[in-house]
Amino acid sequence: MTDDLSLFGDGPAPLPEPVLAPVSIPDWQIELLRKALDSRGLTSMAERQQAIQSAAGRPVESLRALTHDEGLRVLSVLGQRPRRSASDGSAWDDRDEDTWIDRL
Image 1 (spheres, rainbow, N blue to C red):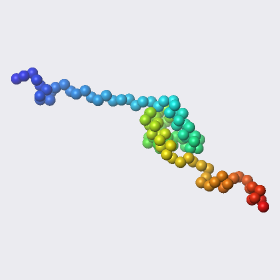
Image 2 (image 1 turned 45 degrees about the horizontal axis):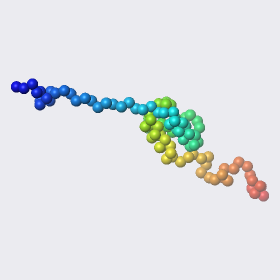
Image 3 (image 1 turned 135 degrees about the vertical axis):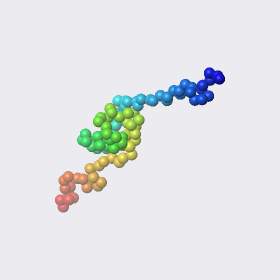
Image 4 (image 1 turned 180 degrees about the vertical axis):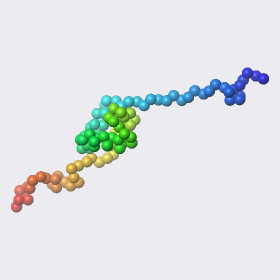
């Protein structure tokens, strides 16, 4: 009998695949997220957090809790959503006061 036990599956165990740790979100990406939220008219913390969590697909305590890949995904989703406006009408419909023509 030979000393070659690998023929019977008793050889050295294969090395496990290394698991890569997620890359944390960089400062420039946080700034882009904040600008994207501002441009969507989301000013309150509750609105901003809801939009981020909706786009990320998980609860998020702060922007720093996102990974780099999640930040890219959130930016992509925010970029696809239309900007929120005061109303669906025109600036003429949104006027606060009567114009001279209205007073006639």
